[in-house]
Length: 447
Image (cartoon, rainbow, N blue to C red; front, side, top):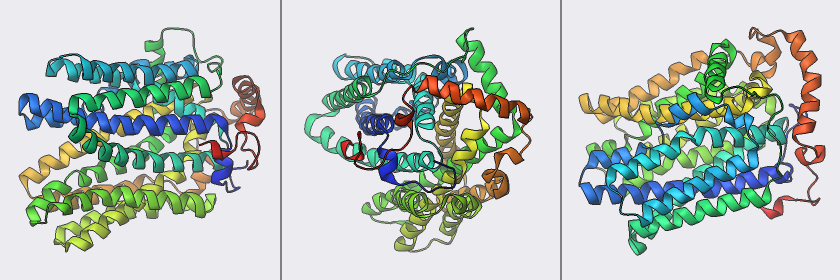
């Protein structure tokens, strides 16, 4: 499929490997949300500390920096099926330990942090595989539907977590987390073809290669710009979302309003991904990156004027729609990173997103404590708006060859011929990585 030909959901879900990764990842995200809710309740009940409960909420994010820096190359060096299945299996064992062993609070947090260190490796391998089996606009649409499913799975996991904790108790609710991760591991183990690692991805020390490849990726001005453009707007606007509880309290809104405001952004993201991803042509989608970044940041500025509750909810939904800006960057990012380090590049992208989304709420939460929640929310919107300066002209996103990344373009053209052969070795059945007509073998109905 060419980059300019618009894909359909039927074509995306016709690819067997994508169906497996989509299903397993959605289940795992719901399980993660359930684990966060249950473990936060356990920690607060055991310690009575609101701070430790908050640390529990974010303990799975910050350690990913270490994993991405030291072990990111494993996403390309190891076979994807056993690697991804092992990741879900490790999450299952950790949940079982949390549910069944009488661990002290510090041990619970350390266990979650250790598992989180390797999250960029599993996510990187999954991201690389999606980029390999989906081509052209099918890849962008695949990322779009994955984002929608992730948001839905998070909401479902939190909602189910509340019910499970109320019925079973927090300790036993963690058993559901273990069961979900086990199911995800089995789906990958028995549903995904046992594809080889990327040929020539490296044979030296994994830590040294991970570190040097990250340096190479960040040293490339084009790759660095695309990374920052995906990291920073999200980090800033999530800082605004994290203040909705404090803002609603300061305004004297009823308790039910907190859920309304917090649900606004995920709802808007779902709508934006659906409309921009499915109905907008690829070229137009790329040209909408800057307007959508502005849409992401402008609504939070309105909170400075203390609008009515209904207007606040609409503003949050509108801001969430702006998250669709990332769809216009997907193809450019895949084309910009070296094929042999594609898995690590996706791991680096995931690591930056998770880390900065943990830092953003802390920074703007501190500002809210020094000023007022409405000013901190508005400032988060302003800083999001400033990131539009990072958006390159659309011609560069449409034609990544127009940007001098410091690599020899003639050499890349030559290597591109060998890349086709490498992909052929990586995915032996060429038809399996090309979207199939609806109704063919492995149609989307299996999902």
